[in-house]
Amino acid sequence: MDRFFKFKESGTTYRRESVAGVTTFLAMAYILFVNPLILADTGMDMGAVFTATALAAALGTLIMGVVANYPIALAPGMGLNAFFAYSVVLGMGIDWQVALFGVFMSGIIFIFITVLRIRELIINAIPAELKYAAAAGIGLFIAFIGLKNAGIVVPYEATAVTLGDMMAGPTLLAVFGLVITVIFMVRGFKGGIFYGMIITSLAGIATGIIGMPEQIVGSVPSLAPTFGQAFAIDWSSVFTIQLLVVILTFLFVDFFDTAGTLYAVANQAGFVKDNKLPRASKALLADSSATSIGAILGTSTTTAYIESSSGVAAGGRTGFTSVVTAGLFLIALFFSPLLAVVTAEVTAPALIIVGVLMASSLGLIDWKKFEIAVPAFLTVVTMPLTYSIATGIALGFIMYPITMLFKGRGKEVHPIMYGLFFVFIAYFMFLTE
Image (tube, rainbow, N blue to C red; front, side, top):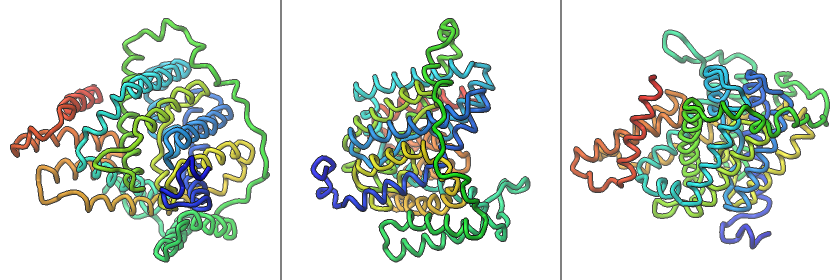
């Protein structure tokens, strides 16, 4: 096991990897409950989606850990599940079974372009400055999510957002958790985020803010209502322009969300060398395979999770972290009632801390060069403001060739970046239709 995952080369241990795996799981366990609630609005069986979510996360994360040897976890993606439910099924009137087929096909296409190394080629063509900006932008994005989940930041009509009720019990619990976690991190505890969540959960239970679970072990919901339903469809509804647009949209959003997430986590862990991600093709293959597997099981697009950064922050450096996380997703099938204590207030501090850690890549951007600063800034700031990683990446990629051309550095821009310029322009045109 030590030699397979290369513990010594990575400067890590079984204990550290195990703590990191648990930390990652706790940071993203919310998806087990949020995903079924969202997809249930389409008419899908909530229990079946819960099981599909856990299995897709477990299998996808296991593949990532064993094949790519990265401490990156996968699960049905937030944003992509909302697009699936509210835009495709409810908005376009497409049956959820057909939408699942669309997700399956997007995964198959991903596998194809990954095997041909097209995805890896595109990722390596992206300039380092934009990758750093994407990493920092994602950090701000998830920190914003953490602040929102904590109730520290709330919607406000006059100014879009404002300070929440700092005396509310859940908000106070989140603030307590943030302070405790910061203390652990300042003191150099490798598992500081994990320990912070444990103490926050116990404090929540002690104060009555978090309720005790009604039972310890629950039965595993049947997968029958969703398993294989991606193929139990009227095939005449498949060969339509509308579904083609849906598949391409799934492709687009997942492609760049995954690329940004993989690079951000890998950069934080110190894997990126010479602006290239080692074993990128294996990591991308794990992601694309998980998407197709998840669709067969009965859930929306499965993708790499930025919450994996919490595990990296806890010391995770190898795929064994992912193996531990995958195992916990399987265990969650049987002990799902216990996950009720991992509330938004408990995970919020972890997201905020991870945002702080990821924002460090801002220091790697040459802000003195305006042709670099503008696209980097747009990438960073628009992710949290538009609540979309893909939008931030798109705006940065559109601006980069423009600023470089008019600076007289157009020849330094990779041809692929010029191609992506037009792709993103078309993407925004499609969004406004």
